[in-house]
Length: 224
Length: 143
Picture (tube, one colour):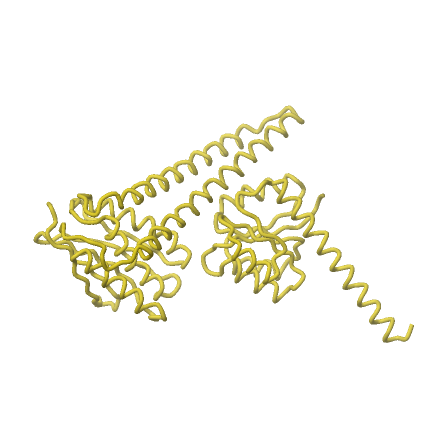
């Protein structure tokens, strides 16, 4: 699937997506930073107290160190994800792992789902698939589908992202429940159509037996 | 400056737990909530000298929570704390009655200063209201 261009999209539209994702991650990183800063402040308070009383609560200190370690790991994950996302615009078409890309864009979308109180889950096959395409545009497309479901679902709904490979084609299914289309539905659909066109992939909407809505992206000619 | 009662509202539990511990060590009485809805519930039950609200939260966001709180209690001293402050958001917050707007992470000493100012302002409002009530009674009685 190397027939990729981003011609249907304006620079502003591409930048809007880039900005939305980077702003979301930077917000998360800032939260991590704020927590570490308060934990460091708490340590400072403990040391100050110890200077006055001659006693240091080492159990509390160990607990704080553990929490700082946990937050650092959370920050590292965010930074790595942001770095991979930033590099997705390096080349118009690249070979990449579909598992990795879907995992990254789902993780990057978690903040938006959390703000809407929606659970966003992921089902990946054990065997990875490598494809040649535009990782940036494909992430934009998957995100647009997630965003459409986030905007049309009610609170506490669930959205699931999964993909399966069959006969050289890959189907990425984003499943949720459209409750109310709202006034941005047509704009979102328009964006999805532009992206599927630029990525030369197929898009269709279907319903499951339990009346859930599936936004299916079908990509052909995968590498392996 | 002891005994100020503060309500801390943020969906980052670890953040409010740690900040609350530090504020308590400085003599404040702190309640916490991880959502706007829960914060409104707590603010209806208890009286606070200052309420510190995160701007971006699941469900009701900071501005929506601020509006509802101020509708129920126009004297509420609400400080917005946010990851990335914008002029637009701070203007909106002040328009809806926020007394201050701080960027996260905030210096604890700065936060303590702002809480003290909010508490003093609330006391002044209380005294002014009591004075107005007395004047009204005196006027009604013809004293």
